[in-house]
Structures are given as structure tokens and as C-alpha cells.
Length: 119
Image 1: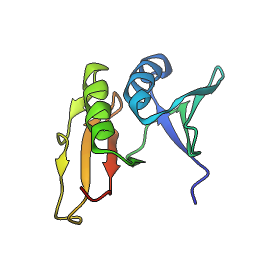
Image 2 (image 1 turned 180 degrees about the vertical axis):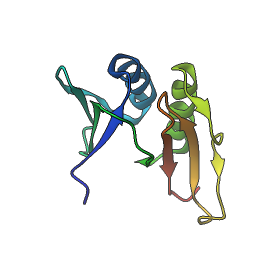
Image 3 (image 1 turned 60 degrees about the horizontal axis):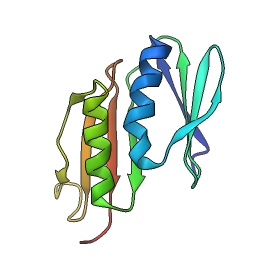
Image 4 (image 1 turned 120 degrees about the vertical axis):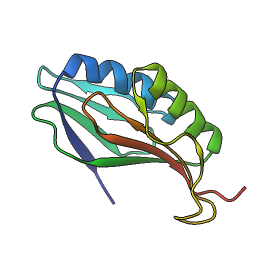
């Protein structure tokens, strides 16, 4: 089990605005805020920290139980300034029920929301 994940971001304020909007449909909200970083958490655990530092290449996938939440994540992330990297839809090349959306955040991270539920 992953306890938390940290991402280095170049502009903490810009990234806070992006992640606050993009992660809201997934149930994440700001839990802790400090000068050098912000911690987002969801009720079912799994914290994400964004920290003022040099960005590095990484891919982050947030799981959910409903395809509609993947859709909402994608729209919220695009509205918050993210760039499309794969609209919501099935990705049968991963497995038959892999429903996901991909967005590039302000620092170039590939952020994904995924639902593995059978429909």
C-alpha cells in the first residue's frame, strides 16, 4: 500500500490551483498547507504532496470506482488548465474494463484517473 506520493512543482500557487480543481471530483482536498508544499488527501487515504522543487518525470494514476468520476476529473483538469493526453474512454489494451483519462499538468506530469469496474 502506498502511504503518500510527492511531486516537485515549479510554481506552487499555479499547481495548487490546478490540483485543487482537478482532484475535487476524486474526493481530494487540501489537508495541510505549508510554505514549501501542500498535501491533498481523500477520505479513503492516499495522500498526494506537491512540493516547491525541480519537477521530474513521473506518472500518477488516481483510482476511482465510477466512470463518471473519471469523466468529471478529466473535465475539471482541462478547465483548470491541463492539456489533453487521452480523453475518457476504455483502454482495452490494458484490460477490458480499464476506463481512464489522461491530462498533462502545468509541469508536464501525466496525471490519470482510472476506473477498473466492470460495466
